[in-house]
Amino acid sequence: MSPEEYREQVLQLVERIPAGRVMSYGAIAEYLADVSGRCSARQVGTIMARYGGGVPWHRVVNSSGRLPPGHEQRAAQLLAEEGVQLRAGRVIMQTTSWYPEDHTSGR
DNA sequence: TGACTGACGCCGG
DNA sequence: CCCGGCGCCAGTC
Image (cartoon, rainbow, N blue to C red):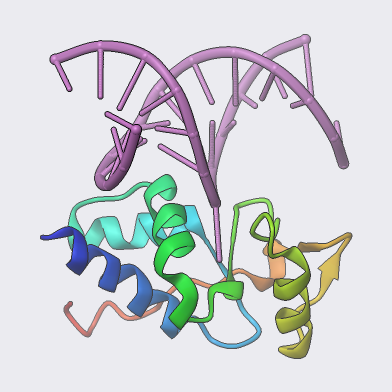
């Protein structure tokens, strides 16, 4: 799998995150590891930083519920509009995190 | 080829 | 809860 395709996998997965829910970089990496064979929260973070502009990037946070450095304000704004509850600027992962269900769609 | 870096994650102090 | 250290993967210098 080429780097470009891997980027697409990440971006496409981010697009499927439902409004009002979020996924951590690690969860994304973990999920993609199953379909692409690779995984690395770091890599996902790098990809989001460089190519996340076209997807709901604000629905991606770190495992602690922290918002992306340098974009906390923007992300908090967008998340608030989707009804996501924040506690001290952090997403409450315990109740807001999401993970794909499909295991039937092959892919 | 080796060192450095980064929208990460986990553990220990 | 904050901070530091170490592991991690890939891209860049």
